[in-house]
Amino acid sequence: MRKVFDDYRVLSDESLKPDEPRVEKFLQAMKKSLQKKDNWTFWLPYTLSLDTCMKCGTCAEVCPVYLASGKKDIYHPVYRSDMLRKVYKRYFTLPGRLFPALVGAEDLTEEKLNAMAENIYRCTICRRCAYVCPVAIDNGVIAREARKIFDAIDIAPDELKKNGTQKQIKFGNATGTPANAFLDMIEFLEEEIEDTKGYKVKIPVDKEGAEYLLMHNAGDYLAFAETVMGAAEVMDAAGVDWTLNSPATGVNDAVNYGVFYSDVEFTNVLKAHVETAKKMGIKTLVVGECGHAYEALKYLMLRLIPPAERPFEVKSILELEDEWIREGRIKVNPEKNPEPVTYHDSCKLGRLGGMYEEPRRILKACCQDFRELTPNREMSICCGGGSGFAIMEKGDFRKFRMETYGKLKAEQLKASGASIIALACSNCKGQFREIINYYRLPVRFAGISELIANALVR
Amino acid sequence: MPAINVGGIEIEVDEDGFIADPSKWNEAVAKALAETEGVTELTENHWKVVNYLRQYYQQFGIAPMIRKLCKETGFSLKEIYDLFPSGPAKGACKIAGLPKPTGCV
Image (cartoon, rainbow over all chains, first blue to last red; front, top):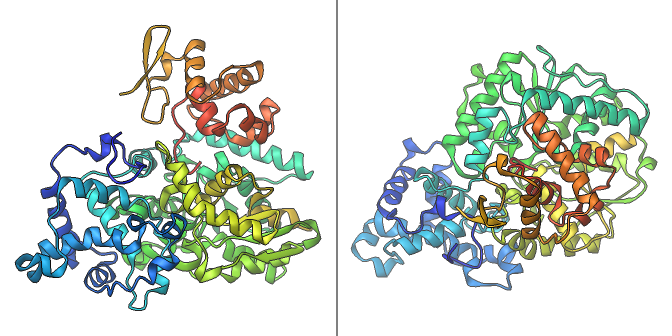
């Protein structure tokens, strides 16, 4: 694949089509994105962010990619936003149409389009920059809107579209797990709990009318089974009426990669989630340990589905676990987790969702030696797995993830002295698995539910 | 589409280096795929993992859970990484001729 921006490529030649004319189509799609009636998600912050940037550079001082790259210009958050902003000014503002050079407006070329398509996938949309911007510019929203425009002209990473949202709609989950394989997994997990913990836990599947439908990120079954087992133990210990669901009921994967790149794809997946929950007649949809699924189901859904059409509540599993520990519904003993444990704030749960205290209360109750990473909470550094990066590794992209976000995170983790990093998001788990390997850290990662299950007093 | 050469025959692979048509897999193809992963020799332990992956895939149409792979082969995850440096999903599955695992794995 030829170089179009830097030494990496996220988009294959097949999806980027770098030698075809696409500028006209791009401008048409962009025009649509600027019209309020055609852009239900973040039209206002998007257009304001395009209009108002003072170029003060505050954002760059907190951007993990920019800092870890040794402050390379091409990774400056404003450089990235300006790729779209220059097009906006040139084609969609009067001064830019009349006097482009005076207002920083530039013609869009096929080469610039290639570079922009790649650069919007050098940012995980962690929105640390948005948190510090003195005039509330959201570079994350600009990157996402740019991804949407590219998707509208059919340019999107295969991992997110062809093998992501579209596969999820077809198979019920992005992993392509059929129902018989799912049931085989559940049986195996029940055996594993019995083998490792010495007690039996029944994992209910497809129980209609249950109070709680727990929907995990389906990747957790394959790659992070300890989280799924831990959650089952917690549900069982709480004695609640709960169920998992198989793909026979519809969608059984909490993910919605549309959050990362497309409102159209987002809507398709979300509607399938809602249909599944309604069909099963459950009372609360519990989102497993997955950051972006929480954004989709807890927040974005409110904007898209009228209340009458979603007759169920949505909660993160962390909210329930925290509640149950506090009210004594489940009993935990921190001595059962004696090792030093730290917590990494997922961008979607933390900075976006405001869920800072729940995981901390849980971990302090369940672990003897809880310590913070510095910085944390609002200023937490993204791990580099966000917005789908954890599953993107065409060419040398894994190296990009490791040498930017991963490098900062590894330093932070080492400084904490913790031997366990607690994670509440599947993308974070995928990324930390690689960070720990790449930097040979004497650390293991664990899901929150896994640590609670370790501490359970039964 | 890119391809790898197996004894003079071109076997097509996707952009991630996974076999395009899993039915074209055989032991010689496995060896050629292993080389693309920097695995120069396929030992008995490699075959144990590869054979289990293939058996599971043929039965269920997807790769097994990593935890199940470890349990059934008797290898810890670290040992699997020692055998297949890019890990179970990207390394072992590729050599076993499975399609690239998708979703958040």
